[in-house]
Each structure stands twice: as structure tokens, then as C-alpha cells.
Length: 529
Image (cartoon, rainbow, N blue to C red; front, side):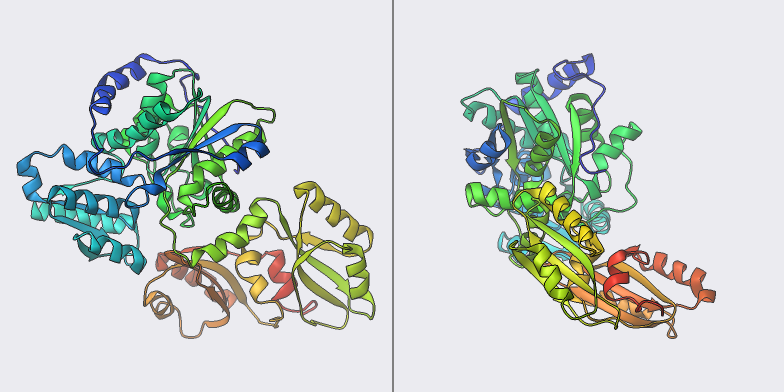
């Protein structure tokens, strides 16, 4: 659930015996970790505009300014520095679709170590080229991180290479911990809250160790994307567990199972975990840009989104909060999609589905009701002789309260309306399809995530029965490793079981949209058909 939290067993500000054991094990190696010949000491920057809005001073650690545009260089370099000469001669290998790959490649080149990087086929060319420019050998394998990782582990054993894990390794955690050492040294005021993004947990574990050791009373809040909240699932289960699937919008933290080592540390030291949705992440990308002129990748702005969510749930909070801009490896093509969703995440835009009678003057009545408010989007096409459906975007100045007021006004004037602001299918697909109504028998409507690689759609189609007709198809490239597809397929009732088996066998993420109100209003069969 959005904004949900899970406290740890250890009360804030207290250290258990197991916590002391962790400090004894890690703090000496963290204090002795020297990365300065390759890793930059990144600045700690005030977010003045966000601070004024939240009433809490907000500081942001600019890890996007590392040579590979993310914090991952720290852990990779710390790991490689601990190898003896014989291990260095063996070479290293890792699996990654982006930031960890670049960190390992740069660290290996700096130390003269041969490096192999296994990357899934969905990795954008810009990231593959970046790794190749760092003189690493790139192997493309599989459609996701897990498959690429299995290949890397196999090659590590076969070729005798050292495997460099992206997060579940004590040396990697040690390297990430140096961020917190710098942060506390740079801050000119006590830090009351520290918000840390969580993917596999290496960054959170490292920063938590330093934070609780130096400042036992600090409140540590881990932040996860709600569609890949593997640490929260681990806390609830008492051990790392695998999520059945994860979303890939914030691909830098799209981890199905957190590391055992990082979980052991985070479960002792984190005070709370909160989750945020994709709209909140997009709004945080916008906040980051407006305060710093930095363009964060979705995972890079995750902790900022969590800070905002926490402040909204704890009104009146004061003091100083710090967070990390953990990465800026974002494809330019994704910015369009991020900008679209940021307005909704910041409650600056309402997306509505409005029904009006199909008669002269009704459109004028609707416009009179909306008044002088700024219309950001308006899509309409004649459907039948009785009613018309509008897809409308309205700019908001006062957020949720204003939206509720608009909904009430429209209903009072006799216009049935539904709020589509949080309807993913409507935002990703239907807004681009209004006017495509058709009477189609036995139509099954599903939303898919296809890996962005040649042949993904062809593989899907080859698995279908030839007599299942595709009745609706919408795809839009959002610059991510996974493309979003809305598909209608005509499946007779007697084929329902076989169809469900086919969906499961595709290996792609899918969701039924049969009862989605946006489908019924804009692209489904006309009323009475």
C-alpha cells in the first residue's frame, strides 16, 4: 500500500547486542576504506525550494556526480581493492543492466583487471556502449537481471573469475558506507532523519551502519518502490523472500530478493521502511531538477519521494533531513513519460473521464462548469446518439482539495464523472486511443510488459493459437527496458483455460483490464452492444 511502513524490532535510537556486533565487524573496515584516488567526494547540497514546502531542511548527497553518474562505483571499487594479486589476475565478472556494470568496469580499468560484464538483452545501447568504452567485455544474455546473473555465476566458475555482487557483499557494503562518512562530515547541522533508497539493500546497509554508530538517535527510513518492495517483504517474513514479480519503472531498484547480508544489517538498524508509487517518483525527479538542475533517474530520486511521503504523513515535523540522489543514468526518451506522470504525482493535474448528453449545447454547459481552469488535455470523438465521453486533463493549483471540488461541481451539474488520475491503463494507453470504439465479441483485454528487444512481440505471437484474433493493440516506447502494451484478444469461452495457460507460459508480466472503467468509456463496445 502506498506510504506503508514497517518498523524494525530494534527501537529507534537503541542498539541491541547484535547491532554492537555489526559495528565491531564493519566499522573498522569502513573507517579504513580509502577510495579517493578514483571516487569523488560528492557535495552535500541544500534543496531550498523543497525545504520551504515541507518545513524541514532538506539536504541531498549528489552521488549522481560520480564518474559513472551513480554511487555504485564506491562498492565496486572497494571490492576490487580487497582482491590480492592472484585474484586480480583471475579477472572479475558481474551481471548488471546499468550502474553496477559501469562501476565495475571503471574500477577494473583503473586497477588493470580484466572485466567481463553480463548484461540482459533489454539493456539500452547507451548503457552497453558506456561499459564497452571502459574496456570491459560485454556479454548479452537473457531478458532480465536474474537470467544474466545466473550466466555470470556460471562463467565465473567456468573461467575462474571473481564474481562481484551488486549489493550482497561485505566489501561492497563497506564501499557504499563511505557516503555516510562524507555526509556527516560535510553537514554543518545535526541530521535528524536520513532517507535511503533500497534496491538490493547494499547502500542502505552501509549507510545505516555508519549513521547508527556515529549518531544513535538518528531516524533511518528506507525507501522502496511499491512495485519492488523486497526489503519490506523480507521484514514481514523475517528473512529475504522472492517477490513473484517486480515493476521496472525504477529499474535501478527492481530487485526481487534482497541480499542476506544487507537484510541482516537493515533489519537491525533501519527504523522504518516506506514505499512510494511511480507518480511520486516522477514528482521527485521534477523536485530534484527544480532545486538542483540535476536530472535524476527514477531510482535516483526514490529517497526524495520517500522523504516527501513521510513528511506528508507526519505534518508539523521539523529539523533536518538528508537523502541521496543515487543515480542519473536516465535515457532522454524517458523524460517525456516522467514529465507526464510528475504532474499527477505532485497533484498538479487531474485526469477525468466525463459523460455528457449528446445534444446541442451540452459541450458549452460542460465548459461553463469547468470555468476558467486551465485544460491540459481534451480528447473526444462521437460514439453514439445518446451520450459522449470526454477524456479531460485539468491543471490544479490546490491539489487534492481542488480536484474533489471539481468532481463535486461536475456531478452537481448532472455530468457523471470518474477520476482517472491514478488509472495506469488510462494514462499509458487510453488517452492515446480515444475514438476507437468497436463491438468485439469475446474480447479479453490485458496489459503487458514486453522486454524492449527485437523479437519479443514475435515470440509472443508464435505462442498464440492462430484462431485467436488480436482486436486491439497499443504500444508506446517510454525509453525503459520494458515496453508497455495494451492488447485485446478474441478468445472463445471454451478456450479460457488454454488462454490462461498461454499467458502464464509467455514469461511476461501481464494484468487483466477487463473491468477498467476507462476501457468501458472510451474503447470498449458501445452501450447496449
